[in-house]
Length: 338
Image (tube, rainbow, N blue to C red; front, top):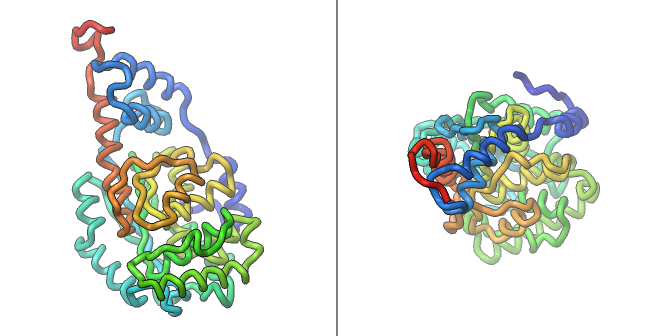
């Protein structure tokens, strides 16, 4: 269905009306878990993950063989200030790489049977440099949210959102700092691998953006508009659509979690259908996950983006679902229970 909002106010209202999990399915899945041929709690966190998926899918026996990976790409005006180790034209080049199947996320999507789509958002028109103006107008940010909303397949069993955009760790750091407080230094990391001088420059630019957009601190959707990027907004729109369809979401790294933070602070509980796929090597990601109350499934030192860490975590979620839905109960197997 087309995005049912045409303004930030309408999107904010929508977030407060999205559905919750199916309590009956949670109860049934919990009961089933207690009868499976294993000692109680022997599968550890996998048991909780399977029951969580069951609740959102509304099934006693959840399924996970049709995941979707959606990648959004956009360019940032602030990239012209030298905040990345790579030039802005890499965004366009990597979109072509995604479409030709040559990136890490293509391999991971294929590995776990995920349908992958790529959405480039107005690459010829970067957002405004947020040190001099709001990154996006309301029309632009709403359009990006709608792109994310429309990109989600309602039939997907699980969703991963990823991104590509030179300069987007700078925007994500600015969004996180505006919403959660702290200094620019608390949130800025090395991103694509900037040196010490680049890190200092990046921090100064985020500080300048925060000083210019003080209003962003009181409204997460305005933080997104003023300091974010089109791909960050699109991820937020996709995560919100997944909630509307009751599709469980696996969150990726720092940039994805900054997009998710906007939803979480705009409507408490908006991320109940989300799980953290991994904790990345970007320095502020653990702090951001703590603010979201999400414990990561994996910790492998990844810092690629593209949805790669979340796509890898697909395997963990699929394993949890396979065990829960495919194992025999004690009665079915003719095994004596405890």
